[in-house]
Amino acid sequence: MAEHRKFRVGMVGGGGPANFFGAPHRTAILMDNTAELTAGALRSNPQGSLEEAKRLFFTRGYPDYQTMMREEAALPTDQRMDYVTIVTPNDSHYPIAKAALEAGFPVLCEKPLTITLNESLDLVRLTKEKKLPFIVAYTYTGLPMVMLAREIVRNGDIGEVRKVEAWYPQGWLANRLEETGAQQAVWRVDPHKAGASGCGGDIGTHAYEFVRFVAGLTAVQVCARLKTFVENRALDDDFTVLARLNNGAVATIGASQITIGALNDNGFRVIGTKGRVEWNMTDHLCLYVYKPGAPVSVYRLGGGESDLPASLAGYVRLPGGHPEGFHEALANLHRTIQLQIRHARGEEAPAPFPHPDVVDGAAGMAFIEAAVASSSQNGAWTDVAAVE
Ligand SMILES: NC(=O)c1ccc[n+]([C@@H]2O[C@H](COP(=O)([O-])OP(=O)(O)OC[C@H]3O[C@@H](n4cnc5c(N)ncnc54)[C@H](O)[C@@H]3O)[C@@H](O)[C@H]2O)c1
Image (cartoon, rainbow, N blue to C red; front, side):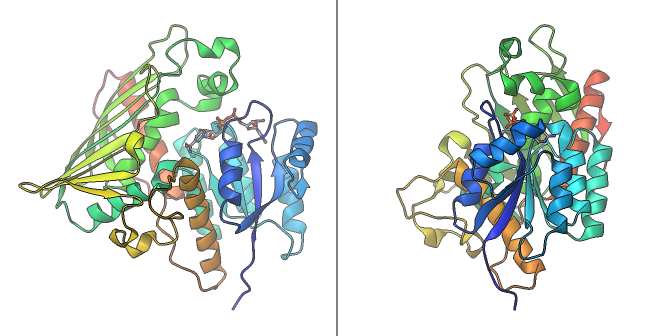
């Protein structure tokens, strides 16, 4: 049996003084003492990239991702990185993920997977051809109560799903924040960097993933209204979709960046013939299950691990009363790719939870492209391309 050791993780993007999401990933990678920060191409300029890798104590820094993939692949197997985490703006996910897969490295990539469906389909093809693990970082699917909701729905406890409501409101782009030069805002309102839908690509994809991950269903047709409320903005800042799902169920999927005061309070209701599950980020330690004629059941993280199915073992770190949250959710996605890699190596390891993979990432892009097309035709019902 292969020896179990710490994972050597590579990171592309996620550096620089104004960066947002690199630090949560580094926290997540280091959280369980199972991995170390090995290879970094952390910024878009070569000098800055090298300096940042040094400042953040990566073992090896590289001027750019192409050099990183080439030189890491040439290292002996007991030194080279084990997988790559991609934390750059959306437009570069595709070339970076492609380069990683071609060099033989598993990938944990930020959402949305790419900026076009064609790019995503190419990554699906390449991942299958190379037989490599590929996780897409829909962070909320790493929260234990969201994972539990999936188990409850998939076990048939609420019967056949009739309807899914999924939402993700934010308010930070209610005004022209991009004019102040705020880094995260500037690229998120630029179609060349963000893709064909701003709000939909950024957070509508998170809401749609609740439909796929929790309910196990997929949109086959959509009727969408994408709206740009803030003047002179090139992309939508509000995203509303009505969907027909593959089992005949109905879904409403809403996201907004102009909901002043919203607290990333995404969530979902999955409504079945025998009951309903409901979860919201502002109350993420609880999962509510409703059955007709019965008192509401509340599962609480920290309220008794014996309530949790075995599939969640290892995805919960602290005893009751000690809050776990967003960073732990991201660490859970890293845990899953690490378990997948261990299985691929023939090591004995616990079963990984089925977190979103490259197919889910591509399905997110199929959904976005259909929503953009529908909205441009005044909400005409539009087919969503099937992704497998
Ligand atoms: N899963 C989540 O919950 C979540 C949350 C926030 C952001 N994100 C995603 O993370 C990604 C990054 O978002 P952000 O808010 O951190 O952006 P950001 O603007 O804060 O940071 C982007 C970083 O990428 C670097 N970069 C750009 N091009 C590069 C290249 N070719 N090579 C190396 N580095 C490069 C920049 O220097 C910068 O450090 C986006 O795809 C976003 O959608 C996901």
